[in-house]
Amino acid sequence: MSENLQKLLLGRFDRINISVIIVVQVYNVLNITDLLRWLNSIACDYTMELAIDPAILSVAILPDAAKATAARRLERFASECRLEKRRHVLAIAEMIKATPKFCSVTNLLTFKRFTEALDSSRRQRLDDVCPELLQYLSE
Image 1 (tube, rainbow, N blue to C red):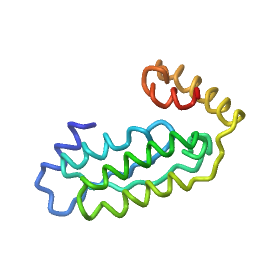
Image 2 (image 1 turned 90 degrees about the horizontal axis):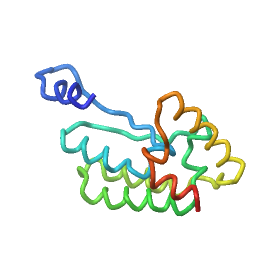
Image 3 (image 1 turned 60 degrees about the horizontal axis):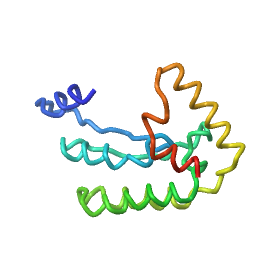
């Protein structure tokens, strides 16, 4: 994907604008700034939306500490991103902090079952792919 996106961006296309729509959700919220930095480095436009459905992927199921960490990282990133993106990045950080509290044992167990099924189908483990997320969920 990286190689293909870079080829498109480097091409001389007068009528094509490339933009990435990022769905911020449980699995990527803590590391979303890595993706944003990379998109900035290749001069690719982006926008972000918060996942709300299925609810089990919403950042609302995360503990407050995880949401605060993700928001803080976005706020820091806002100081280094392109000026025209700053307001959007800060708005997403605020939205993450303002998500309703749906962190409960029931929701976390449902998320765990969902993740185990997903991991099995992809031959991955949450422990390996998102260790920081797992740490927050274990607290």
